[in-house]
Length: 209
Image 1 (spheres, helix red, strand yellow):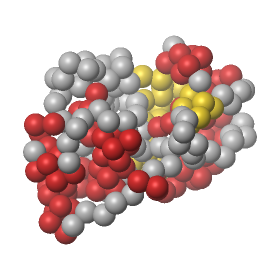
Image 2 (cartoon, rainbow, N blue to C red):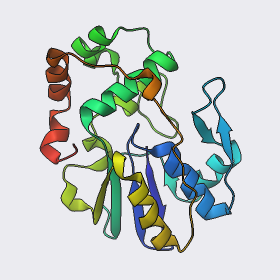
Image 3 (cartoon, helix red, strand yellow):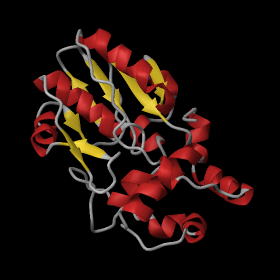
């Protein structure tokens, strides 16, 4: 959920929250250090994080929690369908991690109230509220148009992204899927889907679906 500035290759890679970021960070860490250091989030065995030492290393070498800014070199990104992304974010940040005590229907009906851009708890390295940074429309992190990118990958194309990065970095990357939310999947009603689509209308207009 940030931008990796690979100055060696005049290249950037952007992802959004709930858009494969944990897997991407582990690939970046492996590219930089030659080591894979996964930390299991017990007791949910299929959730993994970067080891703190790897996280610190990549953040000191080009991985930045940020919002969109134009870039002149080669740029690729990972997008996700806005409704699927909302479901994943609610399941992860609200149901699993408990950052807010709010029902799904209340979250959808009063989105701006709960997703506070200026909340006291900030996303690390930014001036923005933690929940806002995760739930904000993708236009904030990826920008207003797909035309700013050399290549756009969908969250379902992580294997293709892996191959792309292997060619870019001349390295074999491990096959990873670090955050599996399938056990907490739920369905929205047609009315709720329409409301979520309205919340993320800028994403649909930009092509982030």
